[in-house]
Image (cartoon, rainbow, N blue to C red; front, side):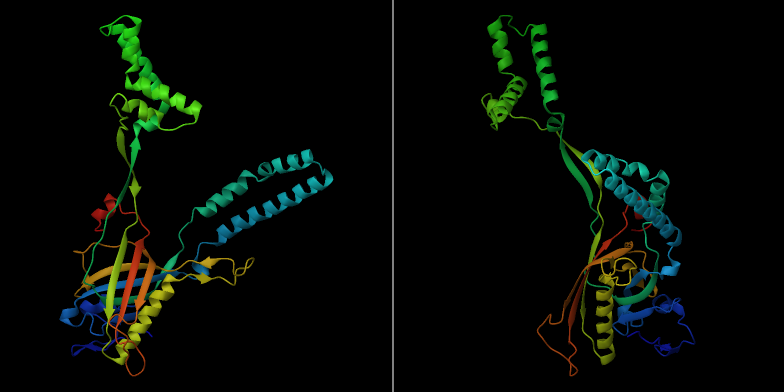
Length: 361
């Protein structure tokens, strides 16, 4: 259940809204549901470090920019329906293979460029409009690490260039040998020299391998002269991955109120990570899912954002693990767990580039 905002902290009366260093933790412009653990978080000097999770849910449908988008899709759907009707009529009037083929081939032409543009314009808006719905403030866990990963692939120039590369090298080797004399001009000398050239052996054995349907002939041909193919590996940058974060909390409530907060916090995380079956879709009840909520994650110290810790972009909650008996099963008189281990694994949905790093990410 949402907590009630205290009217005094450490004996200091706070009239009306929370002000001072704790305002960032308790401020509630949109009347959010607010949870925190432990109860003295932020007020106790030993609990000055806070990690806050803000759950972001899709805004009401009326606030989504869907009216024009819906019109675009509706017009396109009507056009598709007309095309289907015309095609069916054509097939019925000419029930032959050529007639059917002709009718089907005309379908792309009938889907006018205007409808294509409408659909593409509608798809440009990819992000759901979201609003903050719940804040959960917890103590900062003992482990905070982040991995910045970049994607690189190995590329073999030898494999990529393939047979044309070997054929060109073969011709070049023979030409250079004959042009330069090679120390020998007789046919046998040239044959021996060319026959021991690794390019010649590789390209000839590859052609033989293709004709015979065997394998490893080029490798065997090179092994006879103590050679091996140089793959000429290169490293190519392919992009960066999304960062992942894991937070582990051991929740040991010391009062009934804290036990209620723990249950509410776990429920809020589970609910935010789950999709919702959409039974009210006009045309297709139950066939689609509303995507789960997203999270903003911030670190605070003494009521202000801690800019000495890396910032985290908007995230999705990939995995949530709840262990109600981390040190053996034990409960209070009402059946609430004495301890609960909560593990949360998040993944950012934004790419961190140099500009983001300059901003503190």
